[in-house]
Length: 177
Image (cartoon, rainbow, N blue to C red; front, side, top):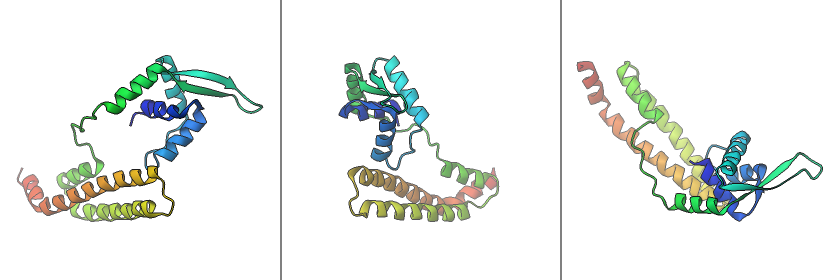
């Protein structure tokens, strides 16, 4: 996920300071990894450097100094281009689950036991996400985020089921090599 573009998107509602942007990010992308404050401020400095955002004001109001940022016209154009651009599907499979199964097969480990344990962890996470979706007053960001995560977990589960069915053949191929 592009922190640069997400922060530009969060600035659509108007000028904000870094603390507000971090809080909004964590609210609007509840299943994503939270942004670190350092990443927010580093990204904001780069947006200003690149002419996509600018400092509206800096003040302290008796507290710590706060800088308020706003999106520029160039930032609005870049954000519009980014939201319209199709994201290419990932060209490579780089998933830790896949890697662990392959290494377990190659090293004489127990990929079947690993798949059973991983499946249980996925099922638990799916129950948690389903509860998030069905919670009274669940907001759109939580529902969309949970749906997205559930779809990916479901795809992982289907892959695990297919792979578990192929383990004997895969292990025999490695043993024969």
